[in-house]
Image (cartoon, rainbow, N blue to C red):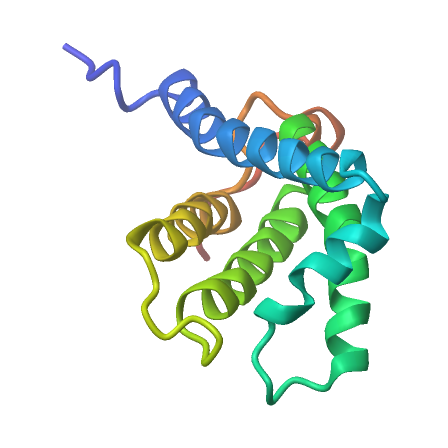
Length: 152
């Protein structure tokens, strides 16, 4: 009897289950930053103090200005399964950046477990999507077809 968990459908559902929570989290995070009173500039001002002191202020400001757009854009791409590996790589980079900023910086000498585990969870989902691909329930699959898994 064939194992039902070794099928394209099972793999597709598993990859969808990894991609969707990451996409939803990124979209909600991006929207929350835009909806703050004062918008993106208020987000930058509020979070500038969390950036390590060795990072130049102008670089931190530019990075923080891009974060809401990156969260929203990457989240939408992940939800749709469009350019999945590229967007998962971007999500992984953002997760690492936030893990470093929130968990292990001189401005936060005693990090909470949430400040470390939250970015780590996102990083894990992003890496699964990056390495395994978007699966069968994605726009990538519709546009580019099933990937060739043969090794020559």
